[in-house]
Image (cartoon, rainbow, N blue to C red; front, side):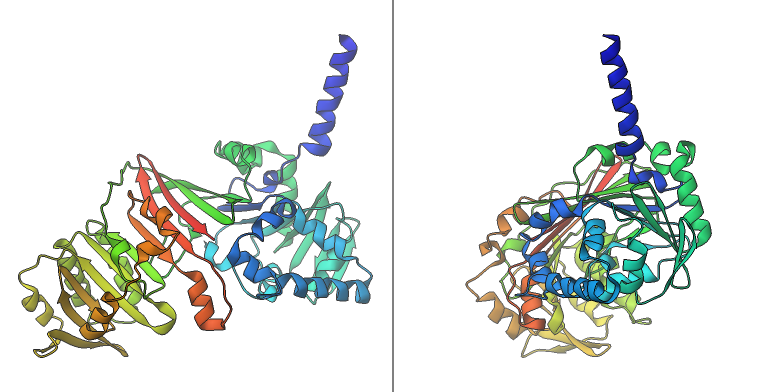
Length: 462
């Protein structure tokens, strides 16, 4: 029995020293943002089953995989560093941490390999990256080649890559920071549990226990996500945000969980967005009670307007107050934009439109007004009030289309989202095809809702 107990103690000690170290432990508790990519190599095959990411990586699309392989082969030829050095670092855990800067997750997706290399090259002084790798001593030379900068060995375990990047190793981890002070703090924090953010915030236990591709933590007013139409995170009155992602059945799911200081419960919505014609690639639904989301959307679509913005927002508030739902649809790449106020019951429409300075055409039964460099039309069709860059004749032609949004296979999933503050469908594949000519079957679903003290922002990309 004593022998078995001794063996168990030795095993636990070994795991703690060599296998139990967690990459989160480098992050000091004063830091605002942490993002971890977990074992990217084990997720890669699943990621390539997602049409959007397959388009980015495969040679039938943008060919990232082949392009990067050629870069690594050039590295082998010119420096002697084998591709496995970089491939191993990318296949294991990767961590990014920052302090004092805004981090927009939307900016982590790019169609250019050089974008990611520039991201590493220009990380802020209070930011750092950590790579788990068995090639810790060879990675500095590999990075210097990829970043097109020199590397200097200052001491046995300190390297300067370029002019501002300081790097070092700790066991199986390679750390690269935007300043020497940041590097030293990360290394010290790793050895000092009381300094670690993951030890002071209990929610990190969930991130450590779960099986996630991308996960992380953010303090308020740090994490940003901006989608077309003013869709963004509002965490001004929150305590923290956790984000996680998984990949399954050809879909990438990304969830942000926000802990708020006040309770709020989203109510169930009955919408008819599925009956809209399938002539667009962007469909946003906003319940009429969600005035804040509507006004934020208006301010984004009409950014740059100053004197007329108040009159526009007043008109949208008036129209929304007399409708059940507001749909914003269009073809973004073509500048086609349509605001639909569903089941509109207003009786003072003419008076409120007159405040915008719009001109009425009695033959066409529509108003028109110029906003910046675009012409907008306002008209009623059925029980809907429309404000759009397409006139009434064109819109009614769309209405005669036999295909509806509900005819798309993915609409089954979209229709099940009935409790939301906003929800969005984007045909990414259609946008890619019209802008680049590539055929990609890729969609995006997004919705936001609140339960008690928690708000959720969910993305599904296929």
